[in-house]
Image 1 (cartoon, helix red, strand yellow):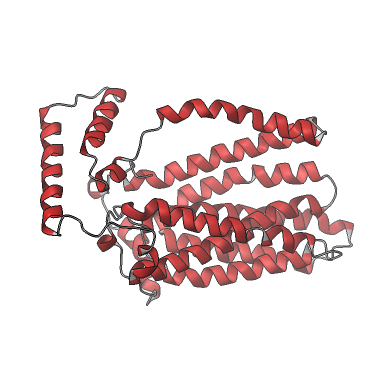
Image 2: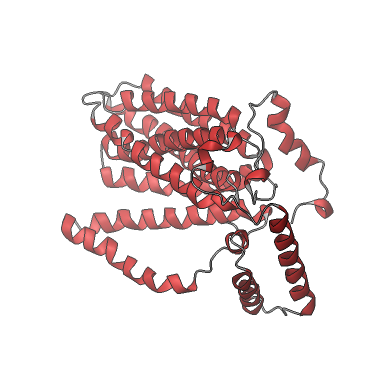
Length: 346
């Protein structure tokens, strides 16, 4: 994410989601073929051993190295990237890097040799970061409950649980397409709002179908799959907003905190599903619909990060403020309509 230009961030997040969806679909076929749970665990985790060999190929973020003033590693990264892409790392490129390093060193000297090193504590001591972190943690937790809970609800819809889970994971692919089409055109805030509202409506609409009637299965399955699609899109956009909101010097700490808290709170998703004994889908879907309403309210406190450069330092973080008008929601749409191809952000 940190080595991508603004126009490629959404596509990268979508591609990650596509491969995740393909892996989930494949796991459904594996679970259908291997019915022994011990052998299923072995078969599904053994391929992960091969990923260990990929770690040496993963470069450290040049933004992070630059924030830590590891100038040698930054230069090595760009030389390596130029070689991989068949480009020449000429004297002009080297001079620009040296000038950048010199400017940063001069700036460090002016601020008392960087006496204050950014730390985890800054996420809560800095006013803008404190409230931004609280909103992102809460939003991430709500999305995790909503997204994860729907995944656990799939086998309880009735008929064939393998087919239900297969369709649940398959719908992640159109969800990725939805995110690709909307996240940049509508902006992050409007896209999240659309996902929460429509996902909540599909969840709440399923409540009106009696769970004891056999004729309710297919209508509820369709509503469930649409709700799942918007949940997956919400998850992708929320992760994108988190990456774009935290500054480089604290991005790792901020994302680790939001993911850690949401990972713990996400356990409420299966609890909502399995504690709703006798209600089948009605009670869980009502809960998930209410969660999306709460999530749509939190969007009002998010910054709009589409097409903006990633914040590098704590001072670069946008001031924390509530959305003041509907025009701010539509600002990315109007800005994109009025932008010619020559002036688009690269």
